[in-house]
Amino acid sequence: MTSIGANTTHTIKRVKKTTAVPGASLKRGAAMTKRKAAVGHRGAVAPPLKPATLTRPEAVQALLELDDEGRRDRVHDLFRETLGEQPLVDRSKPHTASTTQERSGAAADLAVATKELGVSFVLKKCKIMDEMQLCLFPQGVDMLFHTKDDEEPTMGLRPNLSSLSLASMDDTTASIMTMNSGGTDSRRGKTTPANAREGCLLLIRALCERLGKKAEPYVVGGFLAAALDECGSSSSTVRQAAEDAAVALVKLANPWAFPRLIFPLLMKALQSTEWRVKFNALERLSQCATTAPKQVCHLLPKLIPIITNQVWDTKAQVTKAAASALLAVCETNENPDISPAIPAVVNAIYKPSTTNTAVQELMGTTFVASVDASTLSILCPVLARALKEKLAINKRAACIVISNMSRLVDSPQAVAPFGPLLVPELKKVATNVQFEEIRDAALSALGNLTKALGDSYNSQEDAEQKAEEMAQEAARIEAEKQRIEDERNAEREKEEAMRQKELEERKKFKEAMDAQRELDNLAAQEAEEKRKEEAKKKDKEMRSTKAGGKCQSCGLKKCKKTCMFYSE
Image (cartoon, rainbow, N blue to C red; front, top):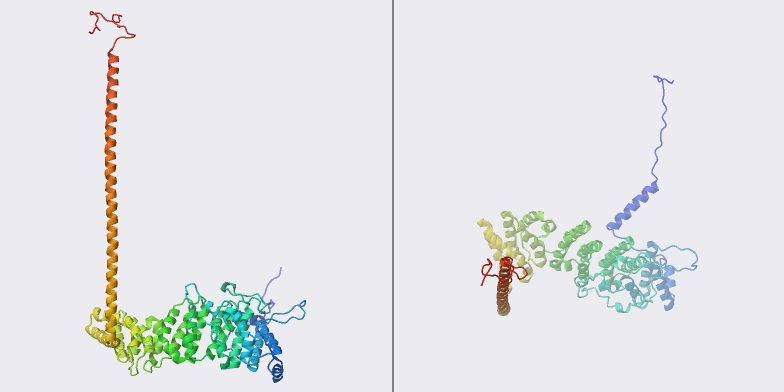
């Protein structure tokens, strides 16, 4: 038996630690990055697309030396490569599908060819624009964000005037995409392959980058709607291409295209059920605040309520983008008095708990410049909410700001949309608050606001129009009263007829019941008399002592006088 002493030594085998394979961690990291990219956006500006073949002057010169037919064939070959099609020499051998890098290079090559050969030749004569429209919106651009509740097509979503009508794009024999038919968004009704849609979006971006303002009449319009719609695609590559194309289109667009073209399109995109579409629409609004600040400032009364509704979206990405877009569009306001307080006011719009903080900052504002509609659209929602606060001191602060602001309103038309928002609350404060100082502040604010609102109602024409409207309203009320009275009379007549009919039926029923009771009484009397006769007869038979016709005492048929049963 082995004994263990002080000199006993033990040897322990060291287990070598397995080092992680660098490639595996990189793969996992890349997978996580891709997964995160699929959820949000990349957060950086994409670099310009680089051409694959038309990089050298010799290649460009060779393209220019071709005749018209050769140029058309070359343009169509580049377009097919952009869509992901590859010419197969030997179909019996396996081939690989095109990658995003290859389609990007082909799109850049086609943009270079467009710049060298002419925009009209490539996009119109070669019908590249028709092919792109057929790929991105085969049913028409108005159907991208069309819902069942829409009665009319969306304003500003019509095809470009320089391109052919979408009505002529129903030809199913068009030479487009015979390969790579998989990967479509069937849930969203997309029948075009994802590679083809990505290629078209890459081509739009390449045209914006290479051609600049020359491409604006051709690409800014319906293609922006398609780019926003594709932001909700199930393919991550299509979403990235759509986002980059939308950024390039908004950057290229003229600032005056925002009110009539880009604004209606972005507002329609915000009604989409896809959160990525709304997210990118809000991002483009923030971008428009830098590319067209004056136009965005002019539309603030329409923009702020719509963006505020997106702040309460259930998706965190949409909420964050809405807050950023709200701050960006509000900062386009040109009023220098409220510029320092805009971050606090915007924060109070989507965080009601900070309303008092914003009003306190506005309390320290000295209004010197004129207050226009865009400034009122920023301030009025917060001030109206402050008038509903529980503490009376907060209501006083809001009344003071409204009083100071109303003195510098530039026109009654600017403040008219916000009158119904502020006047009722000021009246409540002036009548319900118990502190006289606060009531005086509310009355002062109400007087200044009423003065700003009342300038447009003092003319004779407005008085006559108001009288005519009142007369029409009185006539309508009289007609309504007469209609209600006629309905009541008809209802009374109907009820009276029903009552008379019921009385007659009751009378007939009573007579029938009385007759039936008489018949029952007669039948009962007859039955009673018959019963009495039978009882009398039975009693007589019981009293009789004769059986078989002879007396049981004397035995004779006729008893003698001496018989005890004798009877005359």
